[in-house]
Length: 387
Image (cartoon, rainbow, N blue to C red; front, side, top):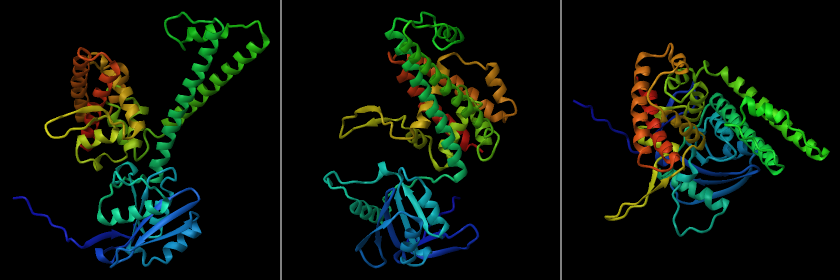
């Protein structure tokens, strides 16, 4: 017989610190604070117990001003603070957590907003956050640890370097095209293509200098990318990503670098209760505008994690080919749990078959890759939540 669970409706449990005991505080005794955080200033809205009045204060974003403000708001264990995720990162959340204050970060795109609300100010945003937070209408995100965020930033740095390298190649290619130097080989940026570039000469000195500068930038970008890739290798076998890298890299199309990218973007797969929720986090689910008896599906929402979505779409192209285990995949699966290898093979059979079936119906290959990427995301979620 399943045991019935219950929750006390007016009690909130709070852990004040890693070495502090748990305390229970009545909900009506809590102080709710909504922060609209900017680089220089913060607008703080406070709702005190027993009142619906919102007090709004403007303060500087420096450490001393923040500490002074919250020291006047009552005992830390009674405070509930939230602010929107944004360019200021999680520094404020960690600072408040170090002060023993419960602070959460909410997803900006999921904050309820009335269609008729056309006025936006910092004070109004702070008030709305405080009221919605007290009402329990906000969706909070998981704040990564400093170590997790550091590895994630390094993975994103490498992605930025890939984009910089692509731009450098495009500039050089367009310059060559403008002056009649066209590569007629099969594939660009191979060894043969680089040898062809090295042999190009321009009669005009200015053109030759321009060509040299473009080549210099290209070589610099390639060196930076190689260095960033080498830096990431050390984290393949380091906690907390070592287990995730070992298991995710058993799947076709996901090398260890891709596995580290996925693991650093997600961190905790178990915070998603269903595979559909994880697919929604990636932004690979279609939008929908249905009403009454009409059902209207739209394009992908693309409202989730763009870095994760890009990696999954890149990995999905590997399932264009028939199922098989090559030398590289076999090397990645060496030492991995047998259950993981079995699940990876089942996923490969399913996704390869799915790719071929969709390709026969769809004219745009990228649409097929996106659909396969969504199913791949579900397989990866199931893998990481499996016991």
